[in-house]
Picture 1 (tube, rainbow, N blue to C red):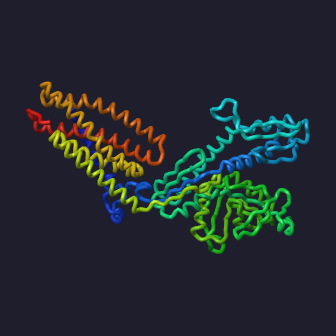
Picture 2: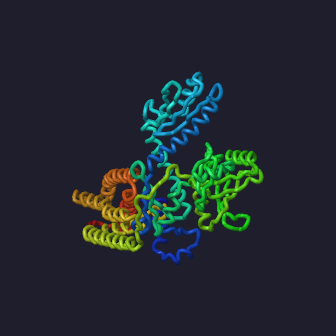
Picture 3: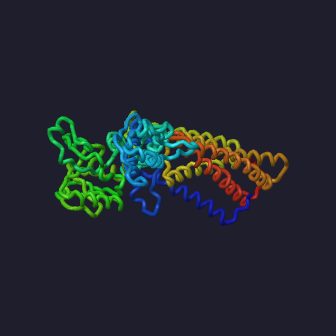
Amino acid sequence: MLDFPNWKIWTILATIALGLLFAAPNFIPDRQLALIPSFLPSKQLSLGLDLRGGSHLMLEASTDDVRKTKLESLEETVRNELRQADGGAVAYTDMSTANSQLSLIVTDPARLDAAVETLRKVTRPLSGLSGARDVEVNVVDGNKIVLTETDAGVAQSIDNAMAQAVEVIRKRIDELGTREPTIVRQGSNRIVVQVPGLQDPSALKALIGKTAKLEFKLVDVGADPNEVAQGHVPPGSQILPNISGAPTVLKRRAVITGDQLIDSQVSQDQNGAPAVSFRFDSTGGRRFAQVTQENVGKPFAIVLDNKVISVANINEPILGGSGIISGSYTTQTANELAILLRSGKLPVELKVVEERTVGPDLGADSIRAGTIAATVAVLAVSLLMIATYGRFGVYSVIALFINVIMILGIMSAGGFTLTLPGIAGLVLTIGAAVDANVLINERIREEQRKGRGVFASVEVGFRDATRTIWDANSLNIIVAIIMFIFGSGPVKGFAVVLSIGIATSVFTAVTLVRLMVSRWLGARRPATLSI
């Protein structure tokens, strides 16, 4: 236990040096960080919303909106499947959606069974529920087929939509260049978003609150202006407002959607004004080329969240799978639109139900209070250890200081965020870090009382106490990992610091202290031991 080969000594010292190196930028003023060479660590510890200040939003999705979106998707799927049914297309009439149901009437009774079989294939089984499916297919009144969303199917649709919404929001916020946003689900239909350092939540709300549902639709040039003025449009068409609020009559069916968009960037139009260029994937590019070939000379509209943002005439086929959206954009609004399109559309509309802004002054007060608490804890523990165990207490204090710095270094290198509960975890770690040394020192005392010599007492003390230390800390770190996995926000912040602190405290309190004791014993070879 007290024999350290050179390779092990250098490994321990290199580990400590690495931890100190990554922690060093936290003690360097921001204005001097730029002077650090690129090959050296320069990343500082990220501070959470409660320490750095920032914006807090709680977003809520409407379950009715999820049902409506699901029904619209089901309607399109049903149309395609009946068109491609085995034995030929199935003719139907009176397709309608109401009360979470999709209904249609099969005009040829002989094709009723084929239609039912075809539509049952589009329903999906639900995981974990034996025999349950997301949609029930039933026949009523002889030739009417009714597709009804099941409660379990709706619940799964909501769960899937919220999981997708979290990822879309994360992509949009990452595009802003912010560090360590917290984006977590709360309940079945809410999402909490916290962005440290962002004091004005209005831009954040504008960015993540938009659905970003992009559609390309043909303009219905045959609509009667007088009828449109009265709100009447031909079957298969709809009225949508443009940016100025004026009505535009479009074909209801989108010829292509933003789901097939793979890139969007800020660019310039032919007049040099800010615009947004976009590019489709191979499937979308072929569809875009086909549509423009078939509709040369006709106008088409680009629709974002049911608002017409651009109308252009198809002068010639667009075969490259790319295009440009121009309009009255500034560089900032063009960049926001590009971000929205790149990150994909939200599967459900989200409304802000809670909004808070945490000022940096509050965070500074928290940091000051946490620093005072940590300093008092270190000093109190240090005095107690030195007064109780003498030289061995000094070794414990040295290990304690290195332990705190290594925690900061690991968190900085790993990009972890320090929160107010994290400071509490750090203070707790300081108190718990010396527990291992207390166990070791008391075990050494016990061996001395039994009459063992200096070397034998230290050897047995470290060996026997280490087993207990490993067992106790293994259980602690398991609990910390469970808190991190199942917790959110403050709980995760506490669990991160606690997990790192447990690992570093075992290293410093056992391995490092053992190395210092070993070197002292080897150099002085004392006949008695005062501990």
